[in-house]
Image (cartoon, rainbow, N blue to C red; front, side, top):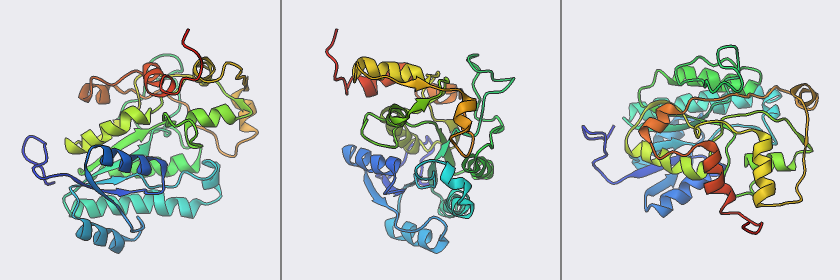
Length: 300
């Protein structure tokens, strides 16, 4: 894997990144520039093995990052009516990339999803008992989540893959329509359920460090703890717009306006926290990395 015995890479890093046009892929490029890490965006389509082999032969990377995938536009409901396209990228493409990386002795950092679980009797809402990395996914309510659970299970056989379970990603760019805060601030009505979430400003640099350490296996890639929709919108009102208002509705009411059910869960982030003890809790990270830098209201 191009690594020395202590897990540090002997040569300068060179990253091959898939997902140039995506949100995470774009942010990864900026982080590489900030850290003076040599990087190239992959030009091949994930499902075309020959393209991937050509990319690796040309770029000669030390690590590969996969931030490409189909989430659906405007949301995962798209996947319900585009099942083959979803399989082609999320299953065939991701597996092909993992396989090509393995043949070339390369670690693949794969940005996956934690939306493959839902609260259940063993992990009740509000209990603080989160799903662990080794738990079997129990949410296949949406076709998107179904494909992601399938591919995670298969990728677990590849010892060169680091699977990062991202959830409800948030960044300090409140103008980005993919940002979970921006999404719920624009919704007519929102549910109010505590969830594990991923603050990209804090966690994406950690994913680069994970590559440098050649970490593999599954990681719940969320900040520790949970935060609810209302708690986030209360912070939004406090820091950004004091006149902001919103309306709640129930899961039953939400079900009438969406095609596929949505995942709600708490992931146990203790494995990630053990590797990176500086990791902030979700509420602290929201304030430090998102709301304080964007503050528009006067400091009390």
